[in-house]
Image (cartoon, rainbow, N blue to C red):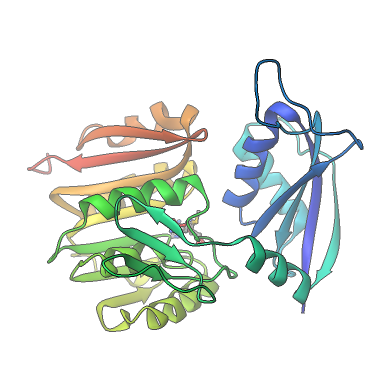
Length: 297
Ligand SMILES: C[S@@+](CC[C@H](N)C(=O)[O-])C[C@H]1O[C@@H](n2cnc3c(N)ncnc32)[C@H](O)[C@@H]1O
């Protein structure tokens, strides 16, 4: 099996945003290289090397993904009028797996939660460790939108809580909540591949007996979760507002992630009537911590 790579260019000031958008739209990995044979330059007054003036970004995608659709989604997320120029090629399986294994290390979220790949020695107890390898579903903790959710869960998850992960990807958020002591979790996604990966990851982390994995249409209507987390893009967060509100118990928490910081105002408007909302921002991405009012008015 081989993989697809999509290459496009960005100016130095945009490269990080573009890289984030590539990941958010489904890239399994993004690499950045100089597009013009320039040395790395440091900006005035900075000690750290910065990105090149023109950067070539390469996004690794599953072989069956449609590259033109992918680029169009990235352009829409970045608010561009038209998709940027791009090229694609294919990459043999072994090469990217090796590259990932070399780059992927254990990461800590909050005080005690770790996400660690299976080929590394896990951090010692009392660390709470989610064992997760990069795979075909989004969610390893490297992206700011996932990291913001993991940090909140590390501090806010309590025993006896029931959790719902809406748009579970790899299952990272549901599995983390369970390992942090939650009583049960639902993990749902519109992508059947994500549901399979979530099942594998739940088994590897010994939480399969406490997680239910399903497509969103199979969720029982009477779910009343203590924590609902939805790390999806801005448009689905708006469309799903009535449903996500209904799935969160009165007084419970809804974490909304996957939006750019510039989209916070718009999304807040769809939730503010029912929730007390606080925004947390990282690397241009935002998460909303929404506490549902005690009575669903
Ligand atoms: C950005 S990934 C997040 C994965 C993981 N929860 C995390 O935080 O890293 C978004 C996931 O939401 C799923 N998704 C997108 N729209 C959805 C919808 N309307 N209902 C359920 N899942 C959806 C996608 O298939 C994808 O797996």
